Image 1 (cartoon, rainbow, N blue to C red):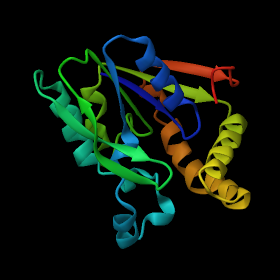
Image 2 (image 1 turned 90 degrees about the horizontal axis):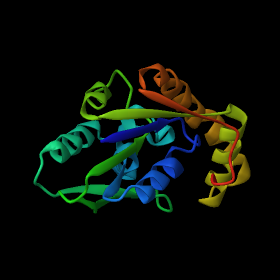
Image 3 (image 1 turned 180 degrees about the horizontal axis):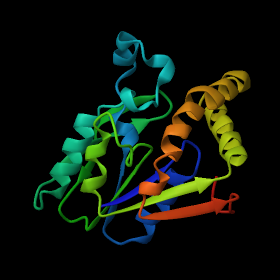
Length: 189
């Protein structure tokens, strides 16, 4: 299992998808599928912080990673629909035929809140680093593309996303390798 980690907008999803495409027998497991539902986030008073470490079902995520380690079983995992900002149950089937599982997410290297159980389940980790200005611009564009007004997109990118980015950036030293993109290349959105 290969973990691809980075702050929101750093390019980890794109790199993970490219990696899966380039490795025969690889499958992608995005952490986003383990977001708590919108209803649960509202019930807990966490909707305005969606994307923070405590807005995910870390126990289910860890259980899924552990189950994948159990050779010979098919593991069903949730995907994520950005249009409605909800997890999609059992969207991903990880069968024993997959030789490589690329796990992509923000908190794979976090050392608290239950996330500390993730890194030991991964064979290698890569931290994706990108200039803050480029990263924030990309986040704003993504939020607008998925329905936020430009003002709301900027507020979210500089508010909850940036707060989460600081926590994620603090985990970079725990990664086995760093992918420093510096500036966006032609293959990045």
